[in-house]
Amino acid sequence: MSSSPPDRARTAGQSTVEVVAIVPALLAVVAVVWLAVAGALAWVEATGAARAGARAEEVGAPPDDAARAVLGARAAGVTLGAAAPSGRRPVRVALDAPLVPGGPVIRVRSERDPR
Image (cartoon, rainbow, N blue to C red; front, side):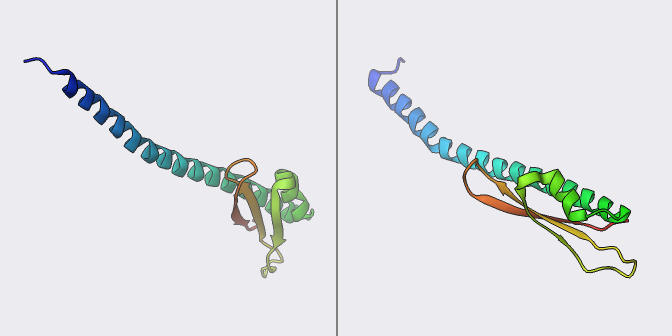
């Protein structure tokens, strides 16, 4: 048996509906992956800056300058924690990472103790 023209049209219409239904789901998955990658990259940058600040604190240099040198203008805040009994202070870094250029940002924080 061969399909009549109305059956083919119905099948083509069903395919269109399926594509239209799956596109938003795919866009949602892409958006979630994008946010996860943006957050992870920002966290890696903040951790690197905190590590640089902790190294500077260890050798007696200004830790906030070292952390800001790693991040540049993206540093939302570099603070030093309370001094430990050893006299060393943990370095805390906050970084505002844009999710999209010119769009909303997420704040990522990292802390490192000098060793």
